[in-house]
Length: 109
Image (cartoon, rainbow, N blue to C red; front, side, top):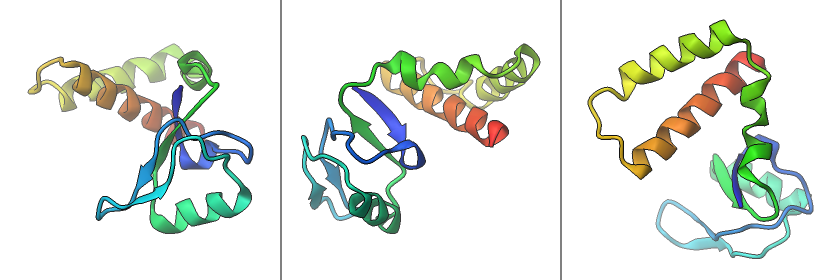
């Protein structure tokens, strides 16, 4: 399972967990195969990321390897500043990882 940005979703991918709207109502269930229509709906609902099956985290994190060392160091410094006041819990580690991925994607695109 991997968490993907909505722009990285492709038709045929399978949801690894349900997607809920802001009111907590499930809009797409686990195991649903993503279609082009789903992609449009997810964008219109403001969904940012979803969990998909059959992808390893290493595939998603491959973007990180495309970034030069100087840029990576600048991103790391920025994230250390932003996350300095929080405990290094598993949840905060995941939030930091996602923030890092988003920063790299912004630079690459």
